[in-house]
Structures are given as C-alpha cells and as structure tokens.
Image (cartoon, rainbow, N blue to C red; front, top):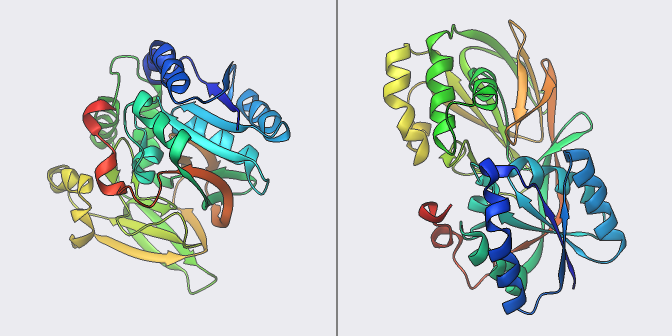
Length: 304
C-alpha cells in the first residue's frame, strides 16, 4: 500500500523537517511507496488524511500527538488506516503503541506492523487519542504551549512549575455513566483513553486503547510542596498509590468545576467546562507493532 506521509514541518521545534530525508531513505530501503504532504494546519491535515483514505493509501502522521489526533479524527469510522511516526515533543501515542522513538526505526512498523482497531476519546464532536484533562493541567498546558523559552520535553516541567506558583485548589463535580455526582477539591480531573501524556507521564497506568473504557484520574487537594515532591511518581505510575489520587472507570464522564477551565487533550484545547467526555470503541484502524514485538521494550526515550 502507498503511504501518504502527512508532515508537520514545524513539529518538535523543526525536528520533522530535519528528519524527513532520513525517513524517506528508510522507507525506500523498506520498499515502501510513498509521497510527502506538508500540512498548513490541523484542518489541512484532516483533508489530506481523507484524501489518502479515498485513494486507498495509508495516512501516516509524522509529527506530534496533535497531528496524529487530527489524522485519526479524519479517519474515524472509515476503512482508512492510520500510521504514525514520532516527530513531536512528547510522542505519547507512539510510546503507548510501543513504536520506536526514532522516526527512521519507526518505519519498520509501517512495513511489518499489523492493523488493529483502537478507541478514540470524544468531547462533543471533537476526538482525542490520549488523555483529556482539566484544572491544574489546563494552566500547565497553556503555559507550555505559549512559552518560547523552553523547548523539547522540558517544556512540560516548565509548565508544571509555572502553573504551581499561582495555583489555588478548585472544586470539581464528576459524574460517571449517569451515576451519583461526586464533588471533590483538588488539582486535576483527567479522562484517559491512553496511559501517557506530557512527554512520558504515565497518568493512567491501566488504560488501554482497546477496552471501550476511559480511566478517570482525580488528583485531590494536597499542599503545594507535597504535590511538587510527589510529582516525579507520575513517570512510573506510582502516583496512583498516593492518598490524594483516586481512580474511576467509565464510558461517559461529565465534568464541571467551581471556576472556568479549558479541557486539553493531545496537547491542545478541546473544550470548555462543563464538558462530557466519552469513548468511541474501535473507531480507528491503526498500524501497530506486530504481536511478536513487546511494546514495553520497543520505545526508547533516548532516541525520541
């Protein structure tokens, strides 16, 4: 099958543009026919993805999670196939799939992977591939997206520290699958389709992309210094054992808050509270490593 390589040339601080020649060389070595399409916007990426599906081509998103999410959104509930190559700051979706962190090495999955149906999260008419979160995360994401002082994965740590300085606890009301509303005070409410966000933070260690469910993570009130001291635990998933973290699961999550917050997903704003987050089971056909490859050992953060 021909690959339509949908490239965000500005992703990862220009990383995709620098890596493109090496990726094309790897694709030629693997005998994969392809053509390159450079995106002008996420809407343009959606158009390119639909054109690829209509032509019977695999739409390969080469960029960050935002680009991958846009291409996945365009292909949902179609016969189109999504391929992914890491080119952004966080690369959390490829991490979840067990795809190599080097774009050239990740081309092997395009050549030898298998197609599986994966879930998408949804808020209103907008979908996401990873984790939708709000509260403290809203502030940290906004700061990370706006800064020009810090690049790469360090931008997430910068966003966290800047957001924490001015943070005050908020009240959240969460309703799962139409049950009794739950009101809590704290930092963050997240509805996770995948395990990772923020460049490798394992917020929802038990989340999978094929169970038709969302894992809900509540980070409750705790002093700022304790929150900061405990923050590194999220990279291993050990934070879920802390006394200010609660886990829920469901298919439909209604979230409201005591003050306005933007919901972010895949690194971009997706909705304003109050919002309802749902899941679209098996919505997207995706090329993933074959079952003979262990996802736990494939991704290399040092090459990301």
